[in-house]
Length: 101
Image: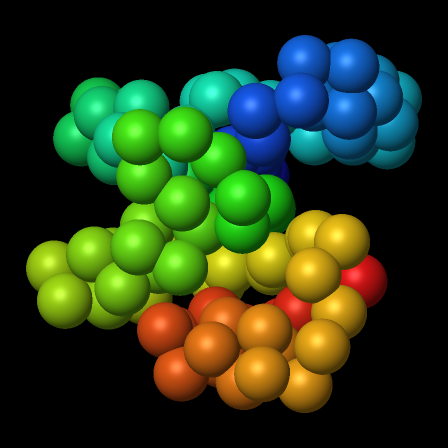
């Protein structure tokens, strides 16, 4: 089954994403920051990452950069309130596959 990792520090938003994805037949794991996401990736097979940018400990940009540096090719969708051109540019330069404001 297709497994999605939600990386979001806002608990309510994370639960909303999870509820919608599970309702549509996906298996979902969650992490509240990039460091916890990396721990999950060491133990679980993940098919897609949906990540926020602004998080404590390790933000979304750092998470994606770490993934790409380690050779992970998992697709990453960044979902964030940061909508400026520079924010989007940084998201794509860090290695994300898509960026949604």
